[in-house]
Length: 168
Image (cartoon, rainbow, N blue to C red; front, side):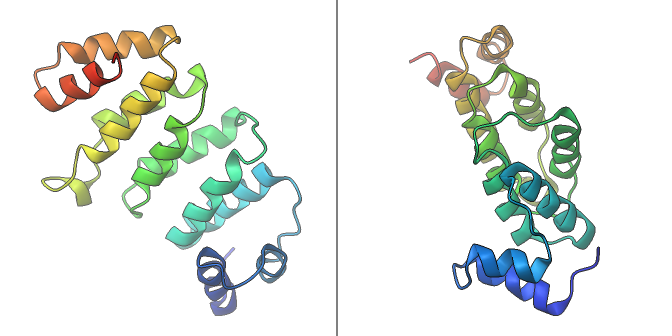
């Protein structure tokens, strides 16, 4: 679905707290009570329209009810994450690193390896640091512990430091 000017304005206005959630949903014609489904619809709109505010807002709805993501939705989010049209990589990883679940550990690892073009030579390790927090939060997950131990021997001193930090 292509967004109208009114809908694009509503997304920005909602992001800045200028309109209510009720008005926001009404303008988008998304009368969805289920927060995760609503977040997923915002992700679709974001992807179709290359709309970063919709992406950021959608992240806020995905875990609002404390439910795990359905595998199809998680795959879609990963596809968006590894694309270069947005600058929301840090927010996405921050959200996933806050989840207490072994389910997202491989995604966090992949995020450490992937550096979006706009961060190369600038703050390319900011996303990695957030992903490491996810490993630390889920250190009881065998895969998180495996990755942390792997990074303790990484040639990159920054990544080694991030890994070591999770054991303190």
